[in-house]
Amino acid sequence: MDRIVRLGTLTVLAVLCVTLLRTQPAAAQSVDDTQLKQVIIFGRHGVRTPVLPNSALSNYSATPFPTFPPASPSDPPLGVSVLTPNGGTIETLLGGYFRLWLTQEGLLTGHGSADANFVYFHANDTPLITDTANAFWTGMLPGAPVNVNTATPPANDPLFDPVDTGVAVLDYPTAVAAVNGRLGGNPSSLAASYAAELALIRSVLFNYSVYQTPSPPKPASVMTDVTDFTSNPITATAGSTSVPVNLGGLEQIILATDPFVMEYTDGLSNANVGWGQLTPDSINQTFRLYNLVLDLEYRTPYLARVLTSNLASHIVRSLVQASSGNIVAGALAQPTTKVIVLIASNTNITGLAGLFHLDWLLPTYESDVSAPGGALVFELRQSQSSGAYIVRASYVAQTLDQLRNLTPLTLAAPPAIAPVFIPGCSIGNATFDCPLSKFVGIANQSIDPHSADLVH
Image (cartoon, rainbow, N blue to C red; front, top):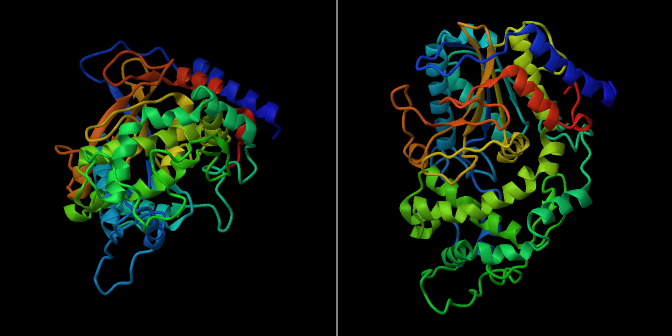
C-alpha cells in the first residue's frame, strides 16, 4: 500500500474513534469506574552480561573487569550480551507480578494454559531478548508452552528495526544536524556540563579517589586511544543503523561504564561493583552519560520519528482493534487478544517515549531510565458509566535493590510504578487518562507515514 494511503488510513482511524466510540472522558472520580479491556506491555530485556568481552573492557581500566557467574560453576562461562541466570529469574518474577495484576483486573484467569489463548508475545530476535521474553512468559503464564513470535532469522524485524528492513529511511545528515541542533552546534560543550560525571568515571576506571588532586595520569595498561575521559573529543557525526549518530568520545565512555548497572543488579559482590567504588547513587551518576547518549540518539524528534513510527503505528492500531472488535490493518494479534507483550531494547523504548514525549521517574533511577526489564504499559480501559474508551500509560520496573535481591513481587509488594502523562492528551486525574480518540489523533500527528507500514 502506498504511503499516501497509509496516512489516510491512520486519519480514518481517528475519525472512527470519534464516530463509533463514546469518547468523552468521565470526570475525575475518587473511584475508578473503568474496566481493563487490553494491555500492551513494551519491555526491555533483562539483566545481561556486558556488550564487550572482558578482554576488550579491560583496555579501559586499570583493574580487570569481574566476570558474571553462570548458573553453576560447572557450566561454561557466559557469553557477551546474554541474559544472566539471575536476569532470567528476575524476568520470571516480573512476569509473575503481571499475572497477579492482570488476574485481579479480570483480564486473565490466572490459569496459564487457558490464558495463553488471549496473549500475544513478540520479541526482537536476539538470544538476549528472546530469552527475556521466554522468562517473562514463564512467570505470566506458568505451565503454558512458550510461544514467542519473532522475525524469521536471519531477517531483521521491521517492528524494531525499520531502517535495515527498508520500512523507513534515515537521512544521516539530517540526523546529525538534529542532534547538533539540540547541542547548540557544539557537542564538545557536554564535557563541561558533565564534568562531575566524567571525573567520577575516570576515577573508578583508573582506580583512584575522585577527590585526589591532582588526578593521576592514565595507567599504562589502558589502551592508547583512551587518553582521558574528560578530554576525549565529543562530536556528532553520521553513524550506522545500530548507532544512528556517532557521539565520538561518549561512545567509548558508555561502553566502559555499561557493566556497572548490570554488576549491581545481577547481585555481584560489593567488591565487584565498580571494584568496590560504586554505590547505587554513584552508579546512577555514571549512568547519566549513558542515558544522555540514548536521549540524543533516539529521543531527538527526527530520529524518534523515523526509528519508531512503525512500532507506534502498530501499537495504536492494536488498541483501536481491541476497542472496536474488528480487524484493523497493521494491528498486532487479533481483536480478542487481551494482552500484548513486546520485548526489545532500551533504544526502542527510548525512541517510543521520544515520539510521544513521555517521561517518568522511579525510585532509585534517574529520570526516563529504561531499566533492565522495565516496561512502558498502555492500558485500554472502558468507562462503565459512559462507555468511553481511554488509554492509561505507566512505566513499571523493579528498583535497583529489587533486581539485586531477587525480591519476590506481589500486589502488596509490587515493582515501582509511575503513571505517565501523555502530552496533548492526558487529563489531570491521578492516572493521566487519555481518551482513545485523542490518543489516535496525537499519534496521527506524531507518526511519520513514510516510516510505517500496515504489514510488519
